[in-house]
Image: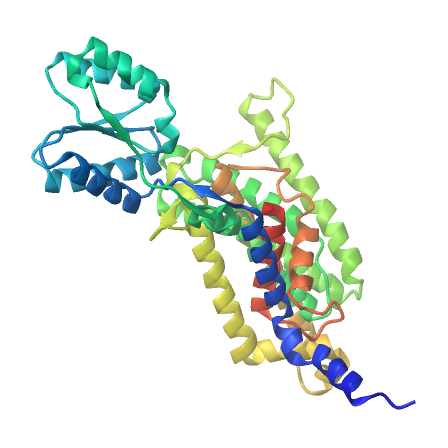
Length: 436
């Protein structure tokens, strides 16, 4: 029976490379559209831009001689907001500008102190979260005005609100990506393993082993609280090399011993997790002088500078995101512009044909498993930096999330097909679903 031209066209459309290459992108966009619609709500900005606009609004309403009290909380975001308001007011007003970073109690005391010192106030500049504090409510201000005439008629001014999806706020988008950066980093190595027709179930356990090893190295050899940059890099390298060695062991057993990758990496998953727990317990026991049994708790890292990688920001972007994007670009270049990348695709597509073509199949497989181990180790360092400690229970079930990100991104479990940036899209799809 002959198929109709329409049916043939539809079949070709669904099987086209365009759908294969960009289908995951379309899914990500649809998810973003849905969550944007579902989280549409009134937004109350607390940004430097909102602070400058608030200052301009106060100047237009109260004139250039107005005395203004800025009220904010004790957070870094509030500090930036208050500095933006104060800077703009001081540039354009002849009045005095005061700032109170604290609590409702401290705000009430500050208002009374200003009134008792003979300082009249025209306005209180704040934002929505602080505007609901008791001392800034209309009834409370009215009573203060009756007690202190200099506070009579003082107005509370906040930035104008607007309607926008909570999902699409800059803070939420950065948080979604940042919280899943370690999974996306590990997925780089997993992509290469799956393209080569393999699998690695040990990545979550290697993440924990790397974090614990790095934490102990920093505390015992790196100087602990006084550890410098060189010491931190060296200790982190210890964790990376250990996990890379585990990856090499996986590759050797898969190639030379011809043990299925599923079995090999399942065993490594149990071994690495057990090592992480045993090492953590023995370290805790050592710290107690051997008088008590150790527990599998996180090993604290007291070097403050170590937290820069997991919690710091560069140009307003969390460092894990910058690291993740850099690694994806480098791996994309490896897979698309080098002979090694072509070898990996060839081994995954047909290992026997690749061998007959002169491709060092065993070497390629050992390399991809080693790289996957290194990426898992790097994920463990990011995790340890983020939580300021090596957690022996970290990374549980990460292997499933990582494999899901790779497959959702378009990489075939049969091997020979897949793209690194597709994995990044897959990781973002999973991150968006988790955030929703």
